[in-house]
Length: 593
Image (tube, rainbow, N blue to C red; front, side):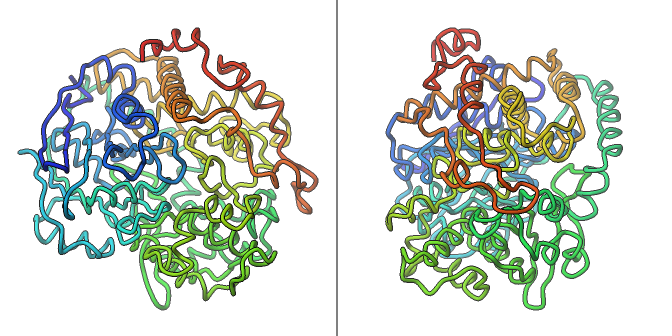
């Protein structure tokens, strides 16, 4: 096969045996790779009601058919597991170069199962894979772990690992790769920690050949023209990185602050991409094969690292009432070193701040308390004091003190930096996301704010169900290919199909990608239903449904979810309870699963 190696590693940590499996080609064709194959494997191998932190859960590292090729942003990979934060099917994807090296080592993926008796790490290269002792690494932060593994294994390796947060089973911990790239959401770091797996190091240099090299060159030429022609991918992101969005979204009144009590932040300018470029940015950096280079290497008076990205600026800044750019950057560096998801960390702290303000908890904590950020982050990672409660996320924390309404989450996953009261389609996307409150399942900011591919009325609910489904399906396919979401802001799915055809030598049309994405989406839905989820979880925090925005461009608006949700279920081919019909499953080839 072209595009796939046809080989997947399976590492059983209980007996420390590693084997190679050769999946049937049909699975590749139906799910492509990445998020698609990961979900398919999780559906088949992780039984209902499995505790996410038990040996029965699995970590499924997957590349896609475009990974490691010359296609822009093709270094990405996914990790799929049952989430200890949400209890749902969960996948996260990351850039860097780790994914490309796994593919170049000759493998499409790695399934990790069981639990080791003592800390271990896995080493993968072109000759195979082996499980090694990691006793001396346990307790180390991410940079120190990466440095130690590279010192032991030699040059040419990329390392994915957990920090103390994952070791201590913080449900808002993440897996870090290439030091500063993050599989950031859903607590996958805790799943890795529960297996006593400290790191996975990969090395590979095999050339990933395309079936039709000349056709690929031509399609790449056309694809890169679109990237250069689009002001977002050729100017905005390369010049300022993702923080370029701060001022725009604040001006639109969709930049939540103070735990979503407000939709603008009065000091947004001070933490914007423009100010960041002026004051702390050292240089820009990109992932494997990326022409956009949206990452920023930064330096404060006391520290240095990468980021913060837009989401991290918001979560550790306005969500907590903080406007000190250097403090936000340093909190971001600390989260990376300890292996914590910045969105969930900041949102959970913001939740606690509002609960303290309303007397539900007797903590010395208030909005704008910049000095509390770093100590709280360390306490969360090490489960010390109040950090032990915050480490399980805002839903669990708020429920403990009777303040469920203060947790800005969907299905247990903290919402990101977009107030859906000014973005009706984004609100529907949040509510229906299979992995919980996520903006990347359907990036409705594209049509509702950025005008990509065309501008729609962000306050209207008309047509939002169909548009949301369109992007959910397309993005699922992109996560299976697997390429960066930013490419989709400039390049249409026609080119993704042409690139996939050139790489694999098999004919794919744009509609094929939508069908594959729809198949993935429905299988994720089936997984959650099997775990006991229903349409009742397709909702938003009450604040967003009942409390109109008080001021600014989104003043007076709430999310009009119910009518959009009714249309959504009907257009999906689901019944009124949100369950896929037998006809829909048959249409997608899922009836026998």
